[in-house]
Image 1 (spheres, one colour):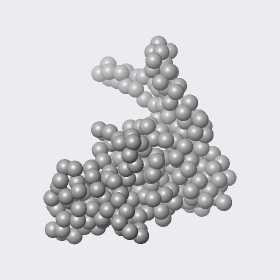
Image 2 (cartoon, rainbow, N blue to C red; image 1 turned 90 degrees about the vertical axis):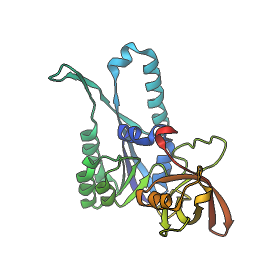
Image 3 (cartoon, rainbow, N blue to C red; image 1 turned 60 degrees about the vertical axis):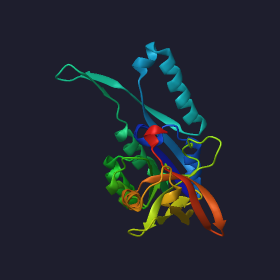
Image 4 (cartoon, one colour; image 1 turned 60 degrees about the horizontal axis):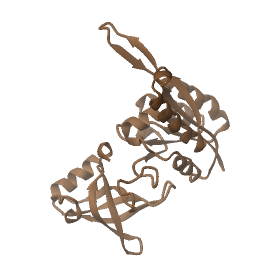
Length: 258
């Protein structure tokens, strides 16, 4: 089995739709690539100054960090620093990008597989450096992901589509998410890709969707636009036969309002 390392830019993931993600599922995702996890690092900012006087904030922060530790992650905390700019305004900074890049390069000597969790295009050179060392490099990201970074990695996983990673708005109901990959001009139907598991190839492509099954209903032009823009849909997947599904109660997934 491949020896694997996980390196998460937690703040980037959280700010772009990953807040509330289940960290144990990230480990499951990596294990599903036929790997043994050797390192699992999570890099995030920590506002220790605020924690000194804001008890509630400190408790929430510690609870959040402890949840990551329970999931098996080693935390690298970058203290938040405050500066005054030329206008006298307070500027807050805490960037762990360099720490992540250096650790990934150094620790990759004992790794075969690296999962980087970020959408930040600044990590493009890190990806290339790891690949030049013969490592397989996969990406986990959410919204606002660098297109160049996504093209460079070996496999790119959308955190919104990884089964079980992000909770649904419908607590008592299993909802699927997917992206339209096929629709013909002027037609009122198309087909959706949805993940059925955590392996690279565990994708179901034979999911039929019709404009009448959207809530609210849409027209064919919108269906084409959703395909072009890569809009994420959330729906009930109704089995129609062997490897055939129909998407019903379809809604556009908006992570900012979930």
